[in-house]
Image 1 (cartoon, helix red, strand yellow):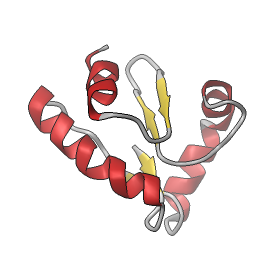
Image 2 (cartoon, rainbow, N blue to C red; image 1 turned 120 degrees about the vertical axis):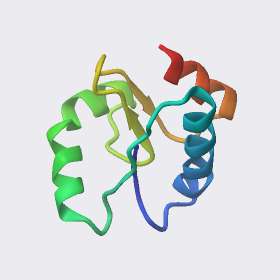
Image 3 (cartoon, rainbow, N blue to C red; image 1 turned 90 degrees about the vertical axis):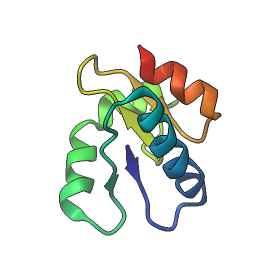
Length: 87
């Protein structure tokens, strides 16, 4: 999960990601990109794929599945997040 420290949408999604990860017994790695240049650069390297999946935008929060390269953009419901994580 790429997120921004002060992002209001990220603040909503971080605890949902934690809860979903616990329920599904998977580790969700959270990488802050607004104040961490290394993480921001990593996200920029995936920019083309993220923009393609996110309506042309490179914003946060963004969930990126490194196993299947699927992307989930923005704020979403807990149920939708869990459904996406199960793929």
